[in-house]
Image 1 (cartoon, rainbow, N blue to C red):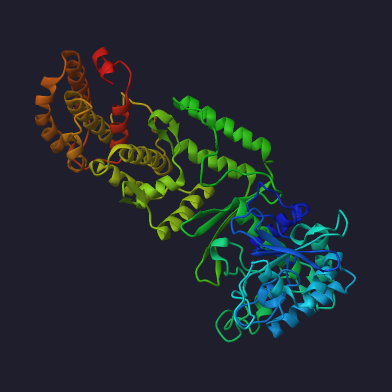
Image 2 (image 1 turned 135 degrees about the vertical axis):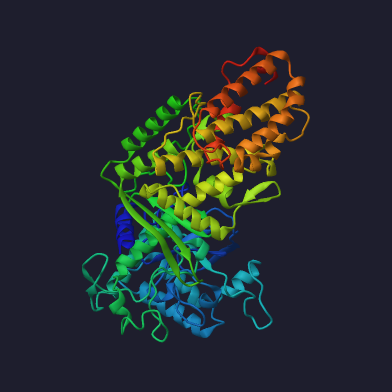
Length: 592
């Protein structure tokens, strides 16, 4: 019940925002006994219920999604079930052509309008509905088309109401009237007062239990329910319990608060990946960083050195600590629909804000690399997944949605829990980066950057190795040195031909074989390099000859089998040597 408890806490903290329209939000927070839906028709009445005008509400129109009151039964209606919403409903309910639905709607609205929790708008709407002219009025205004038998061509169109002439405070639209919403909440509470209470497993109090629970928490899975146990013939709870109440008892109020809060969070804070929606929030309403992206957010400053990068991370961590109290809670959850009717909670975690922020910081401090002109960065989780599991389609890497959702959850859990970087992802990225010839231009750079960042993180987590993000000229690591040699071979050939030749170097063509048998691969490359050395200017030729001899000399002193398959760190040496900018001869600097 942790998720629902935190959702209720969130609703209670944000209760003052329930029913209020905020243009900065995708959706408002719905009050208890209310849902968000769309209306296609707007009807304006006067204070006595006389028709004034009507219009069609555009799908993309601002405010097309509205808050309407619902009963527990009407919110969960499906199929042929006849359960009317108390105020805004479909033409099939508000017009008299369908006598059964119409009678149910009139009964529901009348009961509310005649109660002590009535509102002036209700009397006007009820008077108009009883008049029975709604289809004629809408047809006359050209809002709907009628069939030959007088029925509307589409009975699923929902109607919303505007009532004028009731004074400055009471007049206007019903879906923005906070007083009308509050009246219905009190009306529903009074209706439930006589119900037998039961222990609510969320609040721990004795309250009337919910018979049905809302759907539509995640807009991508509109009909999927998080709680559903009303199948007495199937296997929803049979075999474990004899009745649904034994499985879980949740009060109506707690259920409404939790589901409305989750829907509000999903609409405004949810991040969808491959059909799965990820949430990260603080129940008190404090802003928290996105768990799938950088802590720095919109910081566009370029970190040219590791020192600058560490300083930017420190500033980002300090900034979040000022906004988010250390003892505040952070909730991370992921939702997916296994079927059209069942919503699954696929991941859930609660952390103190201090732990959460520190773990985000630690991930970015170790999973990072130099990203060309953008400076040192940490690749997003999405980028890691794309380059690990994606396939090249029309020049862009794209992952399968099913793989994306599962792997995103896996990396989020790894980051939030402080777990070791996944072995298979590190190996897969190193394998792909060992075939750079397959990719072109920006894709090649993105793959190499992502692979190096992941390798650095993997090496730190599993072997406690801390690899610098600048060339280590003193390293005697065999794989690192061979990576540097591969870069030298590539640079010699590319300098000899120039940047405009558009041809791939032998170093890239033989990269895979070089990584498997580096000594044999280097001998092959060494033979092919001679013609290219001759084409270089003397200064460049001397520079690269000296660099090659320096690296070969360090390799000669290395222990073990030099021809053994290279470790993934060869890619770090390859990247470092290619990006090295210090102490180059003037001729080379001019060429670059």
